[in-house]
Amino acid sequence: MIEITTSLLFLVSSFYGGVSEASVDGALGIKADTTQKQEYSESIKSIKTDNPITFEQYVREYFSDDPILAEIAKCESTFRQYSSSGEVIKGRVNKSDVGVMQINKYYHLKSAEKLGYDLHTTEGNMAYAKALYDREGTKPWNSSSKCWKKYAKTADSLING
Image (tube, rainbow, N blue to C red):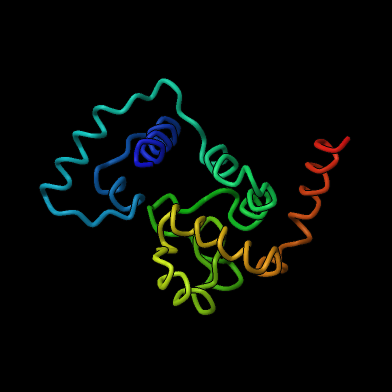
């Protein structure tokens, strides 16, 4: 997982300049001591970047069994978990919405924590979104349905002819 995320950071850095260790740490949600940072730096050096994927590809692959969730991610966050400064993105309308799936912390933080998910990480945000979808369907994202329903219809017509 770190390899994919780091590959993404390197891809982004090729467009916007270098990535400092501090910005990598912040983007990945790492608050590490010196030993952990040294181990992490070593792992960065050993990563193969010959086949990096985009974050969008990562999200689409993660939600391949439920592609509507990828379309929701597209509409909710334009496939972003972190801002360019490494902070978890927050909703424009509601600052309690966080991450790639814009999970509302007011309603879902305690449930996510009980299940062991950290909404401030990509993995936790998407895993909780999957659990939420399995329980409630697309209802939690109804406010953006005008956007993702059009993508869902297009994808459905491509799949079903």
